[in-house]
Image 1: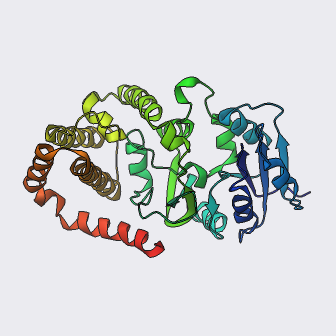
Image 2 (image 1 turned 180 degrees about the horizontal axis):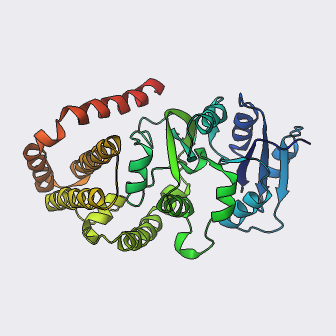
Image 3 (image 1 turned 90 degrees about the vertical axis):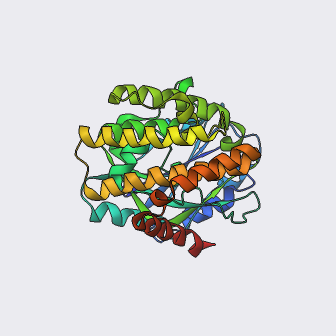
Length: 347
């Protein structure tokens, strides 16, 4: 059998409800030079029956005798991968037909790219598209490296990475990164200077299930990201992000006070100044970084208005009025409109 170009890594655990749709979306890719590594991690449903129903030489079926967990299964798949690239895929998501083709085109076009990310669109348990796009806003490779610690900008089930890179890093099999193993590995790679390119097109439907990790373990995820982000900032030599601001940046609201908004504005502005004084960043990288800061604060305002009490809502509106010129700068409006138009085109 010829060596495949891509190794598609799909762990499977009690995924029978959506597994066929996920597998079909891989097998029907316009780029067909791949192996699909299906790792059954001790499923007790009929996932194995679904997998064995396929007759396709590109499928490699691996069965764990016991439930090893996601991280061990992922690392096992990485060690088994024979392709030049590894494409991640979850057993309940849907890859659009040209996903692999377009990701490969990026690797062939741009020298030095190690990771190719895609935009994703949320779907619910029934497959209905959710208007809230998980990754509506994306920035260039320089800015991703600078803000990954504050927010996971890379879609784990939609990513394609050079296999040698994945084999050299692997997922850390420690409790401190359980449920955030992707956030951790991308942060380590980006900190070491590896580059991620994001395709500004929806190429994956990401299923946000009611019993999914991002819903059932969100508090633990935020707590562990908080610790890693703090460690990362110390490593970088920056101590200007307070705990209250960091919690809100990560999405865990401890307070809806407008004072947090002013602190976030001041501290992220200081972070940007620190970064630009420390390392060279291109003009486009600076634009992307500034855009993300504005968008992040703007989205936090929206969250505060939605969840805060009457007094807190008034405080947010006063903040927005005081910063209206900052938010209405043409470059911000133009990029925001462009990003949102991508979202609307798939709804």
